[in-house]
Image (cartoon, rainbow, N blue to C red):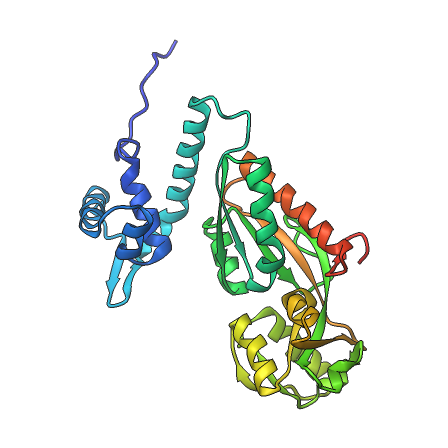
Length: 322
């Protein structure tokens, strides 16, 4: 019978998890100053911890720039493993404290700005009431950024748009969303309930810059329908797009939930695009590097319920209606 041996590690990574928490905060925030504020620490202490960590690893983990720091090649490779390590350590602490009966811990949600609005406020309220042990962290970004966060396990859950008729196998379709032509108050074109896609020909648009899922789909459909899309401005900021449509009498294309409040208040107009329609699927995905824990699963369940509520209000179609 083989004698038992204690587990040995060349790097004693479990001896000081705080240094790895420092690494994670600096990597996510891109600045020692912001990381110090987030960790309620001081920049000099974080700098010493980081220098000690790099000495232990025998490699530079960050590249220093004039604007802050970015992960080095080594830092990028170990980032998802460190995130998993700290998540496991957090779950171990919960287990030791006997709190594992209820989901607990931090859940990071990555989302597009146009989706966050209808979901996040309600999600916070429901999580706070039903699962007080769960802490939410919300990251907003472009579709490319959210995809990158998902691949690198920087987020536990991602909410994305998919422009095909089906979502990838590992994702869950939450709702089907129509696209609308958004115009200023008093505009004749968007005063009607529906507008044909051909009517978008040479309108003064403000649209997201390429690469972007919506922009790519719009450009492809324009070529197919033999019309010209003429953006006079490109912007990746949703608030900026909404304000310039109203102030400068431009047009854009958005899902109705992105301008729901503005339309209800009479600040913008929206006409559903038809012939052909431009639809997208709201999809939910979990980080591939690890399966969803109890806390992430609890948050996902709440997201499903919120989407169903919004579907009943007419904001979008449920997957059963689509």
